[in-house]
Amino acid sequence: MKRIVLGVQYDGTPWQGWQTQPSGKTVQDRLEVALQKFTQGPVATTCAGRTDSGVHALEQVVHFDTALSRETFSWVRGLNAFLPPSIAVRWAHELAVPAESAVADHADQFHARFSATARTYHYLLYNHPVRSPLLDGKAGWVFRPLELELMRQAAAHLIGTHDFSAFRAVECQAKSPVRTMGEISIERRGDLIVFSLRANAFLHHMVRNIIGSLIYVGSASKPPEWIAELLSQRDRGRAAPTFMPDGLYLAQVAYDSKWQLPQQPAMLLPWL
Image (cartoon, rainbow, N blue to C red; front, side):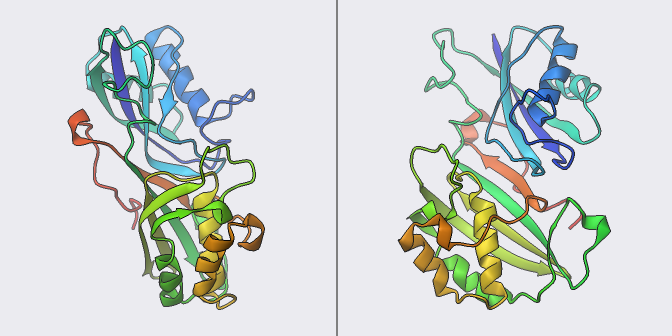
């Protein structure tokens, strides 16, 4: 038995998120259909982290187990032949499954979700008085001017280990709201603002809730210290509403180098 790891990239605009649904209109559903066509049998996949409807991925990491023997380039080319233009397998890597490993989270076995050490998300925001139809579904939009330095001051309060309940969706199923934020960068590129957030893990809607609150600060609706107050209050109702999913990209999931995954460094969006 082999464990095949895939790096999958997708435009989330036409899909109802990653996780399988009865409608079949999810990235996982379409990937598993492609796997079934290529392997001539049902294949169940596990991903590094579920993305919501409309959210994109530069490199989602997925694994599945199979007894089939294929060259890694055959997995890439074969699966892409059965995938729509909005989804592509970028790379594949084969790992052996230890004979004693009967469960998915065995300590000596790679697991797309449980072996991850950090995750990086980008949020692309179009900051211009008039919306751009060319960025529809690819970037969030704020027509009011935003002050980057204020947002950077606010974001500094989020670095470190905190209870992120104020930025957690009501329906979040995580056992603990405590997460460690390693880095937040905010850069302007013309009319585009790129937010990059790296943490050990994220709560449901956490990135979009943080972006919404940082926008409040950037537009001078709230002071930078407001973010620290939100963290201490731990009340989702006091923070900004969940911001639109359009500009959110899962950029990279980090793993121990011992797995030798053919990943690229956490890249910015290809067109930036």
